Amino acid sequence: ALLMADTVRQVPLVCPGHSRPVVQVSYSFPTPDGIFLISACLDGKPMLRRGDTGDWVGTFEGHKGAVWSTVLDRQALRAATGSADWSAKVWDALTGNELHTFKSGHICKSVNFTKDGNGLLLGCGNEKKLRLYDLGKPEADPLMLVGHTGAIKAGVMLDNHESLAVSGAADSTIRVWDIRTGEATSRDPLNLGGPIVWMEQSYDGKTLAMAVGSTKVVFWDTETQTVRKEMNLEGVEELSSISLHPDGSRFICGDMSPWIHVFDYETGKEIELNKGHHGRIWDVRYHPDGETYASGADDATVRIWQTNPKAAEEAAA
Image 1: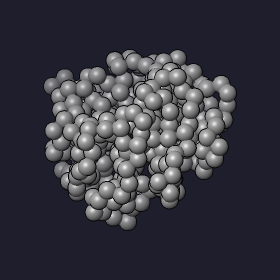
Image 2: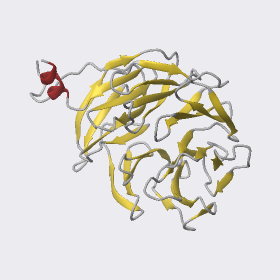
Image 3: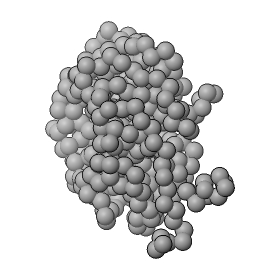
């Protein structure tokens, strides 16, 4: 075998159940009951699983179109989903019951709870606006965050700031918003030189990792609100997603290929290429403990991978 000595060809854990492409995967924060994994799928039926084993817990049924985005709240007691049926829903994650439905003005590509769990931020695609709903007053009109000139790809509530949200759009900019006023904090949005494809907030809240254009990744510091690092990656095409390891040493990306790319954060060099999916990778996400990561792809599966397969193999031996 011509494999390098320190690489192990790993066979991921396969989580079946979906019938169409899995476009987003998201872990909960640690809870007394463990860590959970939720997946958004174009079959319109998001699924909740155990984060460690991938075992199915339940399916949220009620959307009338593809589901593009999904997330759990801080305690993993509620789930939110964004759909092509021009709505977002909030669900009881214990019973699967629907709690609220909110209009999204267009295909809802991004959903996020506020840190306190009292608000829901929607990124509404070609509406070019974000909507912030108050879950304490669900019938009230949302706060509209208006300013982007291209389709919204992602909206994130900053964990380290009570009142700030960040959004990224196809207009190549990210904008920081004060959700108390609904206004952008700066008249000049930050132009990253290509459409923002996806953004992920690190578990410690200090970094936004962004996929920009076809091959660029940007790491943005949430404290200083400046770009900490950016690089053009080799060996990727049409990036779909990015996830930074909790210790900051490496990051993973999905692109139009069926492979998951693992890069060294310092050098930007690819250190692993993991094959197992069929069809393009839509999303990748590290588990909060950093020992595994999940991926969702065109082949209708979620797969769970080892960050250090050699160590995992030796531990199992």
